[in-house]
Image (cartoon, rainbow over all chains, first blue to last red; front, side, top):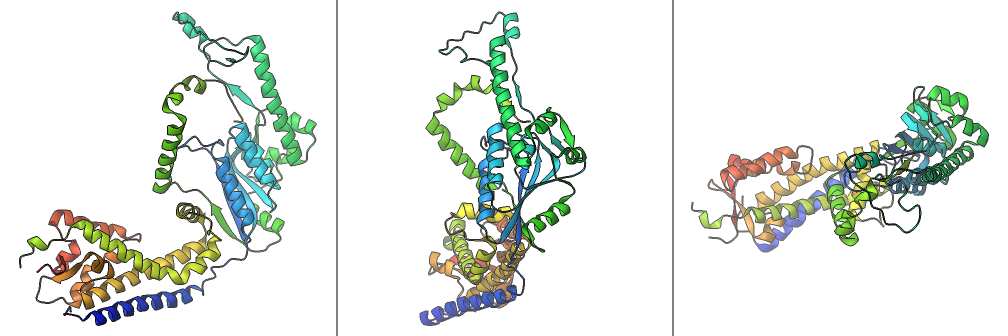
Length: 307
Length: 162
């Protein structure tokens, strides 16, 4: 019931209610301490799910190496995390993005185990090879150590319709890989040389990561895939097993008997969406919308990736 | 009873509600801040959005359990806050700030009415928030009353509007 309440009484009632709520919450928190909320040992599980590439903005489903890197940094700095599982389900991606993640894993001071699920091929395998141990399911798809470069060439189509491509460049090979002109033998040789360099680098990294002779890796690196059981036989992975096996292996490496799994996963929510929209808006404003429009040709040029 | 000139805008009511929810959740979360720090780690150098993203990205049974306990406590604390203050004073802190109060369609404001009108408010930030939203959207149909206000025969009026 509401009467004409004196101001002092009003104040007392408010204070009493607030104190009551605080006491209630404090007593409840004491109950919460009965729950073992502090785990001494944890294993961080970091997912690599999808194509690896430097994020291209809102809606991009690519695995961003900067985000994965931040997860690894967080796991490294968290004293309760004793080891890291890299949970891979990726067909690969761009060279640079794959290397960034692989280097981050390689430089981690805590034990790392890569678990390959459906697929951990090409760039996805490069990432896995950087871990201390690799576990894959028997029928996981892995391997595919190779580099691919491709683009659609429209020169014949243009010629058929009487359309001419005019290119004005400074630098003999500036428009190499343009989809509007025929690739000359010299240009093809140049591109193949570049791709071979990337391939050699990829092989070298796998050889170092897996402690295998480069000649052995080169024999295996025909670009084709290997199933998990095959990869175990040829030394590309360490164990055939499942998630439980990978977790137990990780515990052994970290010399712990019990651990809670903590999953690092970026959930896309309305805050990400709005934050991303704002970020992209300012990015393009700074870059210049007009500049972006005139970059159309670049988007149809040669793409080199590890997929 | 003529109330035409004493109607309170939804913005004013909403603002009062936000203030109240903020106060209650602040009070409830205080005893738990150390425990959350233990589980999540030091987020002192991180902004709110980054902290939210990080916590929402972690799937830990213990953290989820703790957050669940906090939300249950928050439900009860919110209910106690609204019922106690509206029954004794006709106003919560938020309502005092925006100068509105609860009134009864009957002779006097009874505890039963207060208990009914606040049923869905405590669920606003839980998985049962749909109930609160349904209660809220009834205002669009009725003009200025939530469904629980109609049920409890109460309304909101400006202070000193007589």
